[in-house]
Image 1 (cartoon, rainbow, N blue to C red):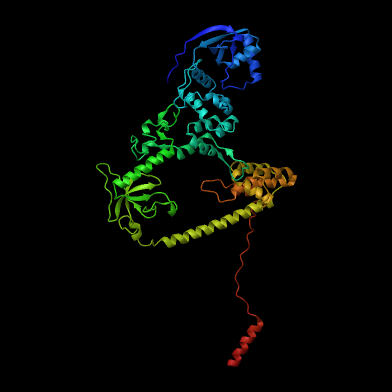
Image 2 (tube, rainbow, N blue to C red):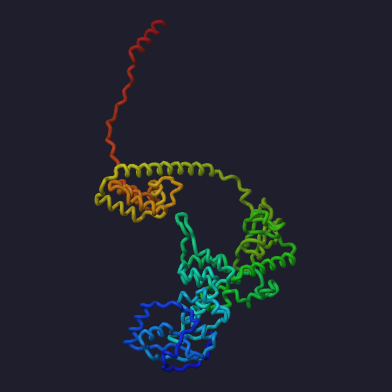
Amino acid sequence: MRTVAAKSQYQTIALASIHESTTNPRRTFDESKLAELADSLRTQGMIQPITVRPNSDGYEIIAGARRFRAAQLAAFEEIPVRIVQLSDEQALEWMLVENSQRLDVIRMRKRKAFNGCSTCRAMTPPPLPRGPARAESLIYSRLALLHLIPEVAEAFQAERITASHANLIARLPQDFQQQAFEACWRKDYQDKEAHLLPAKNLSAWITNNLYLPLDEAPFDREDATLNPAAGACSACPRRSGYNTSLFFDVAVDQCLDGNCYHAKLAEHIDREVVARPELVRIETDHRNPNERQPGTLSRWEYTEVETPKVENGDPEVTQCGASKPAIVVYGEGAGTTRTICIDPECPVHHPSRLVPIDPDAEARRKEHEKEQARRRRLEKDRAETFSRILEKMPATFTAPQLRVLLRAFITCDLYGQSDVVATHYAGEDDDNNQSSEEILLSVADRLEEVQLPELALRLALCSHIGIPGENEIDHLAEVEKVFAPKQAKKPTAKKTMKKPVPAKGKTAKKKGKKRIAA
């Protein structure tokens, strides 16, 4: 980090000769806090001097505007100061670092005051005028906030996003900040408005969508001719490795300019195809056939020939008559080469197609259907059990009933099942714009006292109606035991089987037939 050679001296000067800077990023002061500080100054004095620089109007405050205002409230005539010699740009940098924790450091209406500053990555902050030096990474991240696009800066100003969100976005080129800002939010089906996601979600989105690992790039990072306008990657400031203080948490050097990266990748692929005409162009990701380049093979038109791992020596690739070298022109691994087989009936790379039909497949299919039928019967039985519990629901709960109900409530998935319970009470009303939570709160307020136990049972058991997994507690069965135990069937006496006695008419008829035959 470059240091600023600023001569300084400590003096006590008249308060009237000191004035605040018009470029100080800090513009809001809590009057109650100022009053508290003024009381402290009256009893203990000003222990820490403020920092000023001389100018034509007297002394301009660099750091300590809050202490200066408190001294005015305390009716001080003079205060201790540290006088430093700084240029306009150095003075502004000191002010930014001094206020690095303040939200209003990025107030958009003050952006013109920062025009004289260097770019974020080129700016080297001076040493802080008080206390131990802060981490260089914190200083760079705060200075980077100056380069937020207006929409993101205003959201940060209004505290709609946190400092962590703002710092992650500020490190990106402005062309990509809008995309990252939109990724901060998600609107679930029950939300009326999108809600802010944690900063770790934004960090993951940036890593997966905007950060391109340069160590995995198939092209030569030192080749400045791939994209003459950008030059070589090693000298490019739009990568994380260019400023490790700003990207202290990024382990691998990442490209932050996707357009440049893909331009170099496309040029690399074109050069490889020209230099090696034998390469077959393939795509590893699926996309519309109209979007594919002419002559390229889709993911389903070839088989990648796997290279077996060997401990010693070079790996041997299992070749066949249809094996060819290929280069990926689209999808994962774009720009890399590999060996493929283009014969869909190849006995070497498609041996599974020559295997006869599994003789046990039909038996397994029947066993699967049998298991599915058993589960359907069990699901039906559990639904009937739930209905029986509701039918036998008491007006008040006994202690055992309340205890087992609480056990079910503690482990229920209320977030996932609240919609089901809300639908039961609200019905399928398409015009109902209330969320499930709002519906259930309204139901709880308007239900009569005798109906409240039913709501409690539904909420506690709704997620337990399904078949429990292995080693999971069957809460529905527990509740059934104390709310609606099944009645044991009374044993019935065994009936002795007797031979049926033929009717008299039939017997007489048979005898009559015999006599006729005789």
